[in-house]
Image (cartoon, rainbow, N blue to C red; front, side):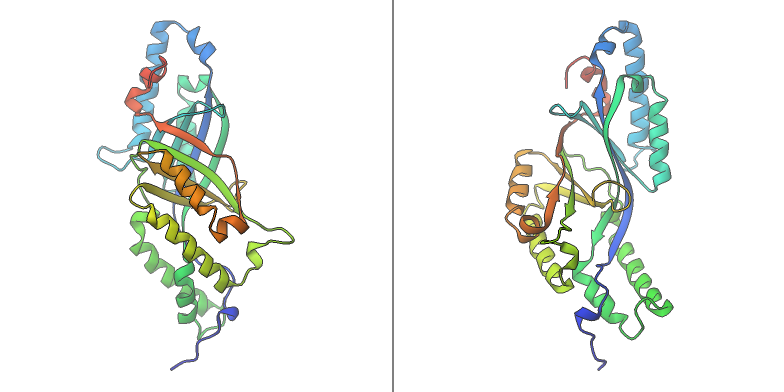
Length: 280
């Protein structure tokens, strides 16, 4: 039986699987300019914008939802658009398509976030590294073994890597980092300890799995934070309960930094005209 290398000899970086590219757009709406527009013109603009958004929502009839619209609460903005696509180029095309609509003239971007769906493999990284243990780390043979393992994982996890936008009523989005300070630095913690903490952290999320759909996206090198978190649910109070409980967990209590939180109510695209008249 071959000798198993100790975990300390493995690369410190956990393996990950990547899927859909994500773009979150946050806008403020110019209500004053909108009210000054003639009623007939407003109807035309609203109808054209609805058609454009419907095409983005489902690029093909019967296709999974790839774009969702939310009415945002609070002072940070008025509308949130969430887009799931297969590439950054496709997301860029979404931006360009929206910019061609007349409604875009009344929208001011307040924030955006670019990321890619990510599944962290703390649980299976050790097994994968051990399976490649007969080869020198980062050698061509080692790289091929790791790539084959990730390819198998991607095929098995395709529904989670390339999800549709969940059809829940409420959205909570926030970015987050792991601390990298002088006293507390997640990236200097031994792999085994990080693996243990992430396992315990994940158990909390699983307890809410029947009430919250959670999509984690990685954004290192793509945006200002390291991860984006999307929570979808039919009851917004569950966001508070889940995040509050997680803050008692070691991973969050010691090593997490959170950005701003954004919350929205699902706005069916066919109801955009009502929203533009001040009604959900």
